[in-house]
Image: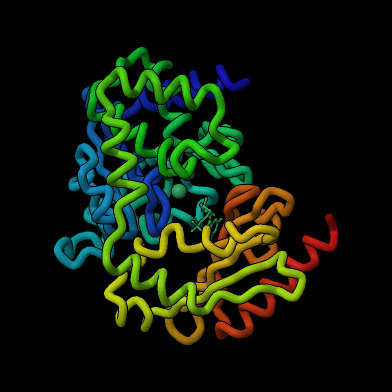
Length: 332
Ligand code: 5GP
Ligand code: MN
Ligand code: MN
């Protein structure tokens, strides 16, 4: 089955031309790495393509090959980004757990567009015309490395760096349970092809911006624990971001602090964005399937890392979420 899926995805790329490549809103390391990896494959095949994301490329990821060519719809420097220059029939979606995750980039899809959906989220419902999905893959970048092999291509340092970045960031530095023997074998090949492992780890995982440290300080000052100490949470607001000089990217990793507490099964981060908009990040220590909890609120993700969005006031969101997490804990 998997070999069939790989062949079908390779055919989608080989048989067509002029693609739009998109990933999810608020792109992470895997989303951007996967976008440029697909671009690299298309470029080698002499195909035309455009890369697009609703949001800007996080500054930490701007070193990646051709990442500066990714059009950002929210980028005021590119006013054309807000309304489509034109629409595309051949669309490749990477790292999108569901169709809604492409955000406003959907405005660039032609009404008769056909989608190639490449993803590793277990909640993905196969929204593509062609679907290349492997739910136990550590990252979408892992799937793309297999596709690269399927297309008979040898990675150079540029694409090796991108794929390594996707693997490194989605496995939390090759630590999560998704870090399979295949992931480590791939990492080995990528290092041989020119990816600089230590430099990437330092740049992507160790270094912190002053804003990141200040928002961590503020977030931790609000840490709360449930009575049984199995749920821990923090919350931050957009005013916090303004006052600390932190950006949205600086929030990445913050949710791990509540989750990392000894005895805690579920860690939560609530990010308020205006009066009635809250984003919830959920992390599980392993027992609770947080993707299922997030799905109950219209979100999704992985067993141990998931998220969802609410249009309710923050105290209400905190109450509702913790209630569902409690139920999940009681059902264990
Ligand atoms: P994070 O908390 O880091 O934003 O997201 C954790 C995981 O949950 C990611 O794999 C992400 O794709 C998924 N996720 C986060 N927010 C949403 C959402 O609103 N909908 C869906 N379907 N998945 C989400
Ligand atoms: Mn992602
Ligand atoms: Mn991913």
